[in-house]
Amino acid sequence: MAKDIILSNVRLIDGIADQARDGVSITISGDRIKAISNDAGPSGPDVEVIDLSGKTVMPGLIDTHVHATLVDDIDLSLFIATGVTTARDLGGKLDKVLTLRERLNKGEVLGPRLFVCGPLLDGNQKSFPTGTFAEILETVPSVEAAPGKINQLLDAGVDGIKLYFAMTPDVMGACIGAIDKRVPVTGHIGATTALEAVTLGIEGLEHMWISPYNNICPAEMRFGPDMSMMSSKFPKVTFKGWEEADLEGPGAQQLFDLMAEKQVKMGTTLDLLWVDNIGLEEALKDTDRIYIPRTGLEHQRALARIVKAGEEWDIHTGYPPGNGKKALEKQKEAVRMLHNKGGVIVGGTDCCGIAYPPPGFALWREAELLADAIGDMAALKAITASAASALRKEDELGSIAPGRYADILVLGKDPSRNVRNLRSLERVYRGGVEYDPTALLAAYPARDFDHLGMAS
Ligand SMILES: [Zn+2]
Image (cartoon, helix red, strand yellow):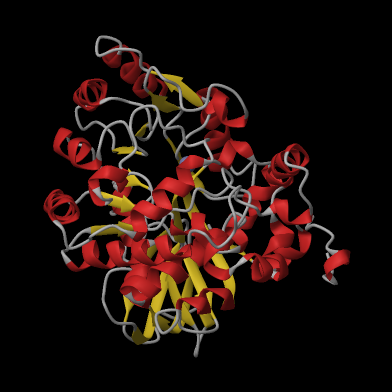
């Protein structure tokens, strides 16, 4: 049997406590954490002691919103290289996500532990009639059809259910009733408002930008059932609506109060507006861009050909870059408000569904935007312990305590002082197995950016 490993003399961020603790030792036995002690820990010939004086240790990161089947196997290694040891796939073709989950969990592919929900369950009016996203979408055509569809997915072994944009309140109620709390249910919603969905018993909401929008924006700026997210009107209307939203008003306050009371998980995905946050010019110089997955790049280039655009389209969002900056600031304010009411903030990213920021790097960016809103330590909790609670896996993942999986990060600098220190990642344990992030990134077929003076 393999020896127990002692990570000795670390500064510990355990995912739960509000403060880091110094001089802690962590015993890893097999794939689990066996013990935590406030001294040098056990010693002797049966254990391997690794002195990590000066280093900070924290739980592996959890991205609660990815689309893992839309990228190549090699792209999944980026999650481990950035310390994301668990991910939840929130929309993929059922057979593909189940197969991928099995291959990841058996270790045939290097990547995060994967939790899956199968296809996006949409209303009759499909949100994506054609294109890349059409294959990850299914409709629940009526109230009567809900139990059959839900049971089919649960029998197949999904870990959760994701309800989608065009689903109306009657069908949503029928779906949530049919799930009957057997697995967590979250939604990226539109035709049903967040307040309606939370009242119906939904446990999570995705995208601060979109799901709560109709309860938060001025009444005359709400989108109706015929609004398509694919329309160029969608960002135009919703950015303006966010800018003019009254967060102190009754719509937003009623929603946030109910979300806090019911402990609804708010999956933020603020990173969807990352390009707006830093501006196109900065984004073009961003060295993380070399890790944009091949599939994402091809998708973007195809769009670029349609609109006869140039190189910037590998990260372009489809509307004038920068237009979402004020809306993003307002969304951060909404995150802060919900957090201060005791709501649950969970940092997902939508990576692999979007080309940029790339897998893993996207969660670092999400943490930066969350830290602006709620502070560094709270941002770290949003991508560890709170994220685990969205999966109902808080007893196994997202914190460092005896009995949890040994999903552990070792960092050169303390990220609870500044979440940008997540970039000082030195080693990653997933289930007690050690990985070297630098070596993983070096082995990744990064893009050639010669024209930008960047080495590949
Ligand atoms: Zn998504």
